[in-house]
Amino acid sequence: LTADEAKVLQHISETDHVPLDVLVRKFLLDGLDDYRIEFACRGYAKGRLNLSGAARIANINIEEMMNHLDRRGIEWRPTFEQHLDGLANLAELFNNDILRQVVKEERAKYNAGDPDSSSSPSV
Image 1: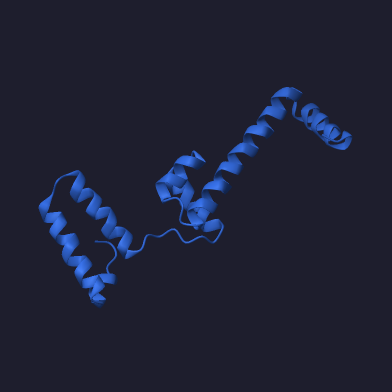
Image 2: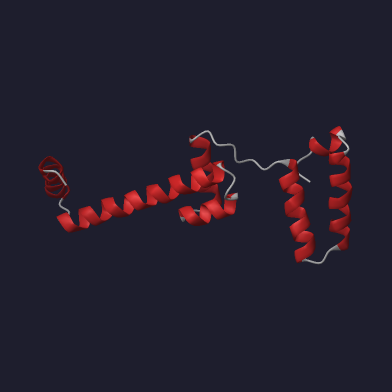
């Protein structure tokens, strides 16, 4: 730290009645939190992370992650294809043939350009 930065920290420590070592630790941990969030947002924006993975790396819940993405202008809403992928994962997880069939039919409609399939992404 520069002498001026050390003076600022000392002033904050005295003003807030917080020991200097506690204050420095707090600033360091806050900076690490900010870095994790920024790293997760960049990873999500580049398509390297999904929403839950980004939230996990940032050490926050999914709703907070969505808020951070919103503030940065990063689109987080899943596409219709991502909804179908999620439903396909659930079908496999629960070994559900009915859900598999629904996903198959919706994918076929979507790939055929059926306007009804992509207009209802809340399947």
